[in-house]
Image 1 (tube, helix red, strand yellow):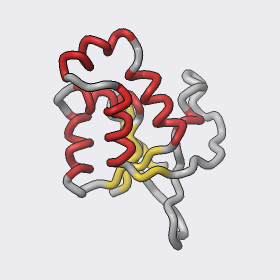
Image 2 (cartoon, helix red, strand yellow):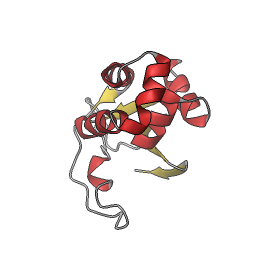
Image 3 (cartoon, one colour):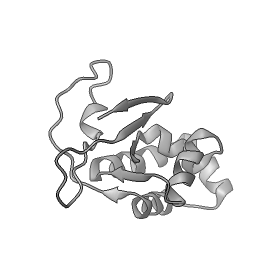
Image 4 (cartoon, one colour):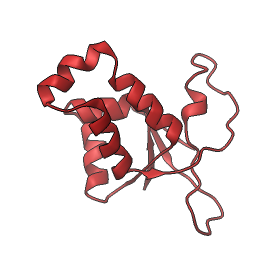
Length: 123
């Protein structure tokens, strides 16, 4: 299964236990393949450097950049395609979704988008 995880899901999975962590764990075990993009990784770095996460990172003994690099190593990096603005309530959200196209012949690419609060959709 191909999965594009929303940044909130990735942050929760990296910093806490629960369903978001299980998404990352299933990718580590090879049961799902995570996909990300440069815009999503930049958003992840931005979110993890927010002051509200400083104590959690310190308690875990990690830097935000280490978590971003670890996630980047876990997920396949793809180039995002142009996406029309369809999420009117959060216009900054839509352009970050990668709509990935992995290398190799593939007539149609489909991924499950995992978003907070875990609403699944096909992209």
